[in-house]
Length: 268
Length: 265
Image (cartoon, rainbow over all chains, first blue to last red; front, side, top):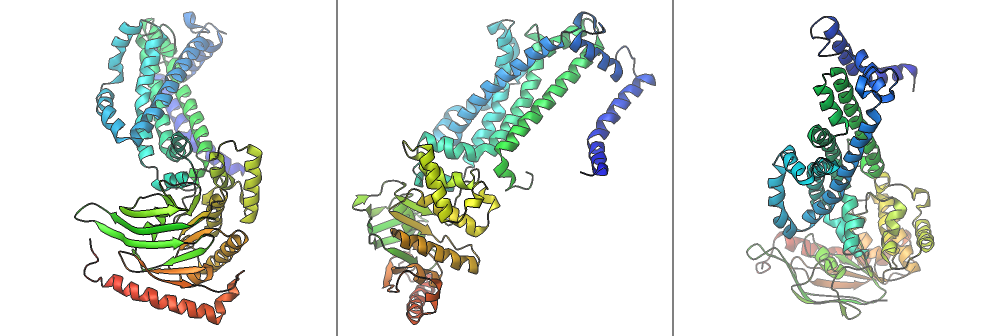
């Protein structure tokens, strides 16, 4: 790549983030918002550094605690997302393949899907107590639906010619699902997984605000109670970056798995 | 070697009211180890007959048998090369070819690999083994589809207009390729086509079907010598057979445009 192309690519990516950071900094400098309520990006960065390393004591009682909270949140997201993936793909496949299964479970699922997931929070705390379980339960439940709906859609869309070809080549029963139907339905399944992962990040924070005493959501609400907007913002930035990184990671895996599909579609 | 028979077969599509009788009183025998081509006007039931042998559908009445055993379901003893190929787009060329081999019980990996290499070489795609079907030309995809089926060494080979989408030059090359593959290892074959040259060139027996509901109107014995090369298409006997087939097909094509009363269900 030529230097100029690289500069252009960088500008393409960086223009909007830089503009937002500048606006954020200026809003305080020009007195449009109170610094006490909205610390500037440099302050937040300093706080974030101390949260992560404990080097300066800038973030007071929170100094050096980021790693612990981050690990707690990531673990919950992974646990909930994994459960949602397994259940979502399995159930979605069953619904996609069988009208009987669809009729049996679809109305129930649609009603459940329309109850905001957060509405399950109080009940799940009553049930599980203040612990990891209500958080993981909530994430798994919320992340289940995108994967499930997309999988059942993808399975229904699988060309009957592939199934015919598979049967002709001696494949039947469960192998037909694993060797033909799931690979063919992959594009839709990956769409579901991506949406589910996004939901998982939202729900981990929501549940940590109330149901657990650790994690980035807990750090956020605790910093609110002790009036540390810099810590709150550092926390939000961390959540945003983590969500972004995990999405990029998922896209990279998806790109490998769907290399064949990129050849056949305009979007890649 | 396997003999395929369809006896007094009736096949209806759709439900009462708008039902279409695709085949009625249909008889067809494919003698073991012979190559039969099937010609006929569009919609006469050629593909319906092939699907019955493949086991994708069942007849309303009559029997479909391979070596006397009734066909119940699709299986690797009857390889099908589809009109739209139906290669698995998510698998690479070698994985497509090995697909059926991996379904067999107790097939060791190195045997699968050896057999796959053998086929890749036979169809001239060794250099393209790690490509996806979408990266291949039409003729290459045809060869993958044929290799995928031959991997299982099926006694019966069914082909539904496999070369229909190819350009004229590639088409002739693929016909020669298929003839040489088949002559090296003859098996019971049924090949559907609309192309008269192709139908004569490949066949031991050439069957012409009537307009719907399809029956075999006439069977020509193609007594051209084997091994065959494309040059045979300029022989007098070839022309004679092709012209005979042309007349038969034309009669039925006309009938299918102006259907006689009594052909509906």
